[in-house]
Image (tube, rainbow, N blue to C red; front, side, top):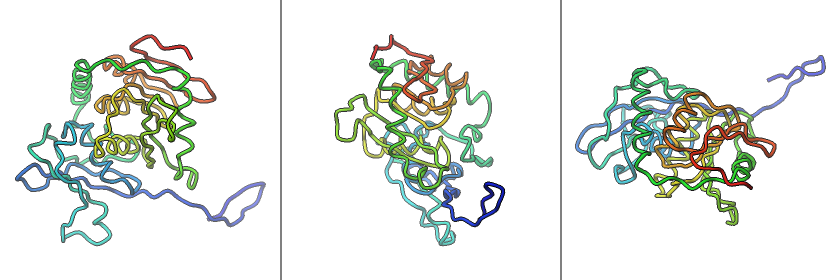
Length: 278
């Protein structure tokens, strides 16, 4: 490639983030696999991505619904396709059925594959209803929320190499541990995928993230808050701006929502309980 700078062109090398399709298939107990959908993602942590996405979509409710997650061994696949197809075997029936997503979900969009506007509203309603029965999360110190992007940034290795990766991390409020309260950090070309990978890690490893905080490297939209709510997370922090639907769902699901977290400051758009001064 070439770079234009200071009025001239020069050859240079660069590292580019990988983006490839991932097909997710789901097999209910005693049934053949069915295609759930295809998403564009950065390869790596594919099992976590599949598990986290199915949890967010209500197809599974927890780790006990998962019998196995593995790359597909379908002999009709070309060798270069086999690591781009994941099959999730369930221990029983699906918790919630779905329509095969003919519309491909891109790395920039998650709700793109949702069947209708009514389904988005129903998803928000189910999420808020489920959260209503959960114990309220303890309040987060705003100073800790403001510091989360820096804790996330130190672990963004793919971004350092390519400048093209979003990141999502789950953190506890205990900064005295060796990992400064970091549960997991995942990167991907899509911020929704990064969140699914982080949540999927917690699911597959039986890590209780109830009340923990999710920090993302971009803006906070409806689906980011929805994924966090389903996982039981108590606070969502974004480096960028929130959307109106994200704020609305945070209020309905009793989640702390913070945005514009940078340079030691943070804007609290919703706090279900009074914030604790730092």
